[in-house]
Image 1 (cartoon, rainbow, N blue to C red):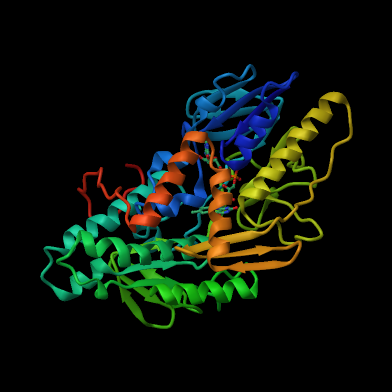
Image 2 (tube, rainbow, N blue to C red):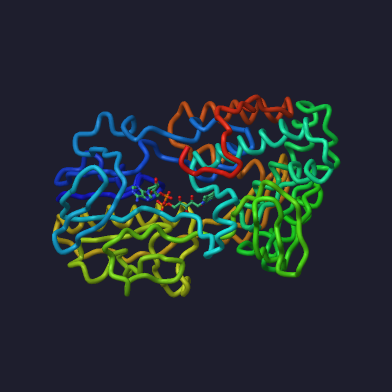
Length: 425
Ligand SMILES: Cc1cc2nc3c(=O)[nH]c(=O)nc-3n(C[C@H](O)[C@H](O)[C@H](O)COP(=O)(O)OP(=O)(O)OC[C@H]3O[C@@H](n4cnc5c(N)ncnc54)[C@H](O)[C@@H]3O)c2cc1C
């Protein structure tokens, strides 16, 4: 069976590993990058806490010794389901089974100003661009004479108080307290403001009431200006305009307020569900394609009794779906009936800063906060990072940061020739 896996994120990588060296399978794992990205730690790359290579892992290294998994670095252009062909920017690839694991990208909800000027954080390169912008702003701030312009450079606005927005705001606040004043002694950091805007009434709204309340308390403690029930209307690269008529001057806006599935061209439009996700059946199969096409993770929309509006777009869902697809493909080869997907929610967590995190565990029902939650968060994330070397370096980095209150990655490896951001460099 020739299985083509489109996307080497959490789900695609897991599936390829599950089928690795399994007799009867010929696997092609394809991604537009030649590395796997550990998205939960993008915010630490953006805030110069971790090196990008520490959270990226070369795909070819994982499967160096594989007898049946091959890698292609290519971008998907189109699927031709009737011919069972995947068209990429490099070549056309035929398949017996296609697994779509292309995840999701930033959703700007059609706001052209935000799309042009705000920073998304859905890839390692975007996290690095954000890092460079933040550092560059402070370099510029040293020479600026105008007070308004200075304020504009020092303010940072994060939009969306889900885990990404909260973690990023907390990390920026810690940079402001512990790192930046030492690097830029000529600047007055009491002027630097970090705003976190959230359209609903609370931070970490998808978590328990306790965790949401705790996260708010931690953010307040770190000096983040949290504005709930606050909707961004527009952004022109210099000023954030809110729906309530107020404005915030800032040259750095980070957009963490929405994602949409990366649906390849060629998928029947009737199969697209809310959030631009592909509707799948209880076996994660995309219906109408003779049971030879699957979708998983952030891209898949599956309603089950406990999740009538689809699953949360988190790594464990992608991993569990990959496990199910691997098992069902093996069953198919053996002529056995497939198993049904049921998500096992083992909990959720977010960190706000040093010794400050929140953890919700469904069974037994537990809500942890503070140091214990922070230790839990760190241990789990360390375990999930791919590669012993990466795990070792991340651990050393965290240890070093914890004791020295410093990081040493504040290097700008980039030419700044344009005033606005560029996604492609
Ligand atoms: C900043 C951030 C923080 C997060 N924090 C957490 C967290 O703490 N805990 C948690 O559980 N989840 C977290 N998530 C969500 C989690 O990362 C996703 O749910 C998970 O990655 C989904 O896995 P996936 O396999 O569906 O897609 P992804 O892991 O996104 O993988 C998709 C892959 O497809 C590739 N791809 C996309 N389009 C194409 C194309 N056209 N051609 C070729 N390749 C393509 C991409 O390069 C990528 O490698 C976070 C996400 C972000 C962005």
